[in-house]
Length: 336
Image 1 (cartoon, rainbow, N blue to C red):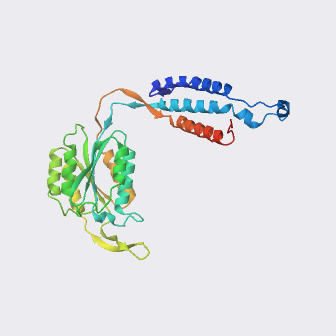
Image 2: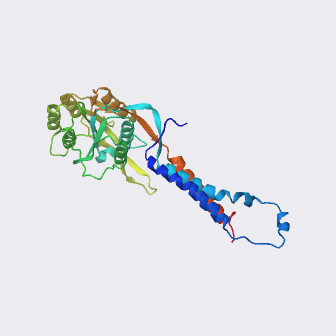
Image 3: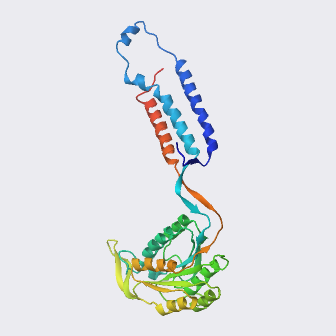
């Protein structure tokens, strides 16, 4: 009847044997309940049977069906997708180095700032990946690994969502960020390994120069794709708030160095992109993927995709149990 239905934990289905036991117990309990005797029962008989009389026997069945639905939910029913998942996973190892310096608060992408737009585009980029392992390095005046290479995109997007400026010491340590990203990729066995650098400024901090990091990337055969975010020159920058809590913007000069980013890309065999709006950033990330060769990370066969279907059964169980308790305590309350 349900050829595509399967249970992850079918052993819980043995609990369905409790359902007839519950019904038998309810029937016995009802039969043994004390009854009131009237000297003139024919007077009551002429009144007819009310709605409560028909509904009272339904309460044990509601409880039994609630228990049955809960047991089925525990067994975790799953439906098989028509599509088959290839277990010979082809993917790319990608480490994204994201700039968190205060200059990323610039409002030339208004109504949002540069960091907000970069996070949105990166989240969409991650959602569109299937088999690519992705890691995340953040940097300002120093660089840190925020997430190692992973296929758990849900965790990665949550980490990305929580990123803020003014948490790290300010500055733009591009060289340190690239060195940290390369360190994450150094032991990767994937044939395609790549660093994506997203920044809006010039290198002005850190212990390692960007060109030294580019040389290391070249020796490791890891291309660096650089994306310069922002328009450059004088851009709106937040200067606090006014009396009404509105952000005050002032035109501020933010230095950029597109020549440096172009040189890093050329040295490592990557590409340089300029993103002056959200669409440009999105296209830059897509071009990175389009230019890369797929490599196999794992070997295997094929497996079906399964979707969890226990939610309706769990809702049904809670709904029936709540309705049974409500009716038993109100409209169908029995006074012994």
